[in-house]
Image (cartoon, rainbow, N blue to C red):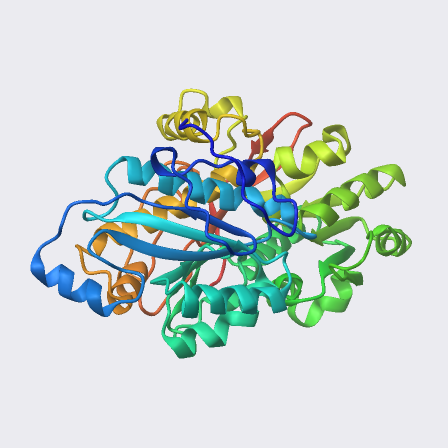
Length: 434
């Protein structure tokens, strides 16, 4: 790991890995701006003349760099996801160490939005209008990305591989400049509902979900499967706001409904609370948890691993602490990367794997650009990824995008937590894209 430079001043306490991240060759580019993280690249090879001309016409692209913008909840109710941003930044440091892309180094500017949509608007405008980034990549959060969805499309700035599974990111007819990364929440809920009906035709389901597009996608997916029989299977629903202190009262109410099955669509803070509360009140439903809140290090350990035994979710990434992957080549690559670039990080935090996966995808899409990093071509390549095998995705799950289908990942494998690791079962399952 390069020598660590002292952290700059900022108006809130960023996670240690962010405060102390070294940039390429140990040089930290500290811009005097609130909540700014930059991984800056040194000068690279001079490309051929046509590429230079294209670079001059594209904001954020020069003969030596590609400037990429990102917003991430390094603070606030969803700060557990900050590991994704840390992994992104480390990946681009690794990529710069390999020489970058087509002779250009990545200048990754990641700003804290606190999972607050108004701050996301402010930070995204800063990235586009002040920092002149070429595109926005991997921004995290459904409500936060929703706040800048229309703005980025109007500006024709690629909003690439959004780090949420909201189904809205796959809408090329109305938002051609936006593509998501995670499996659709709607598809995920469809998969859970089909499993519920197969295993328990008399399911009595209770649902707790975040009161925004993130949570509502799960309700939509359930309705896709239950249809006119919704009231037959769903006995009670409850919502929470990200400003709520806990979800204890909602879970107590759901428990009183007599439900024998529970689905929770919550960010990590509230997911951990839900696991603890369900255990503490002695409720033993068949328990499904959104796959964006099943990190061992960030959710299950804080909740108490023993309290989550039996929890079911849908996996798409490998788990770094699962012995099943000890001899796996792809996981070996990831662990070597972590040892060099994020050596003090908790490798049991699955969000690092997730960040590595999405950054790897961007790398491959940029390679397809063949030196033309105009916004139009970057977007074109992002929606034309074919059968890509990402080292940390589960076997059988590959990336496929097309101009008519922006669902980047479509498949999951169900898994059950046994107190120590996620035990996968059944086949890889695809939901119904819409």
